[in-house]
Image (cartoon, rainbow, N blue to C red; front, side):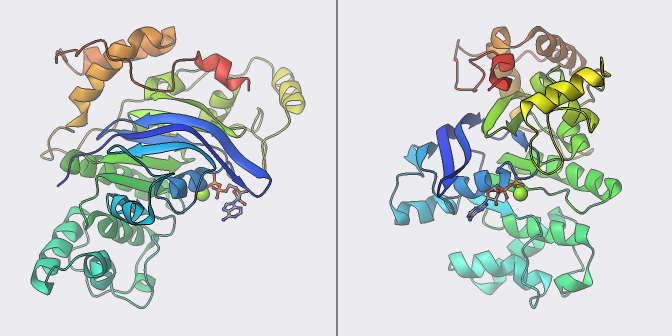
Length: 349
Ligand SMILES: Nc1ncnc2c1ncn2[C@@H]1O[C@H](COP(=O)(O)OP(=O)(O)O)[C@@H](O)[C@H]1O
Ligand SMILES: [Mg+2]
């Protein structure tokens, strides 16, 4: 299994014709960590994932992986880099006429010269990881939505990706299936140490799964940073999202204009605060610790002084409950976390 790699996105902008989807998106996915990108429907989350794997070309900015800028590199280099990615598309994107085994084997047959014996070993290993042993001969149409997601996930894993992108893995699943899938995602992260980016608008997923959370809103990345920053933020858009409320800046079909949002917020009065911070999902017993946990702890400690007070408090509490947590704190690295501006300021754009 390959360990995760850092993905550095800087000043990225994407338009279709004259319609701008988002601009100036800057964030770093830390290696092996689980990051979630939240945002109302239609804000360009899928467009962002497609840009990361080079299916769409942003007109400005850079996406750097292993010292290669995907926005500017040659087609052949892009083809190489793309092999580092595993992607779980929204519907699993399985071939309807192929059984699960052949669906999962497909990338191996397409992109490698491996023989059928080795392919069988790899496919069975991944099917075991996602809990699909015994279902090899089934067709996608014969299984549940949750199983299709897991099959899509097994297929995303066969080339041992360093980065795994999930486009709304929880869409169309009931809360129980979503909980199982999220547990599976945590376990896979512990086993692979790959870098995960999960697009979702499921509140429970955002509260329990990630190390880091970003929010796409009003054509900008409103924030990106340790989970505690967003989950303790009292910005109206965040609390509307986390409480699943109608009142607030986010409208039904598109984002409301700020005047209407302000009016509603005033009418709604002093709205209930944020839900309490839920503990982060841990790997299942026997799976072992996620390798990224220690690295993240050192990283977050380094950037602690740049974070809002409420986030610092939540981080300190979680570190205490995790135990001593005394890895080497590392040097005074100040990475590009996209947190250099006060988060509050970023929401006002
Ligand atoms: N290939 C494309 N050509 C033109 N417009 C597109 C294309 N793909 C997406 N869009 C537009 O980009 C916007 C964001 O889409 P999307 O990324 O699917 O949103 P989300 O995943 O956040 O719900 C939408 O308005 C959509 O119509
Ligand atoms: Mg989408």
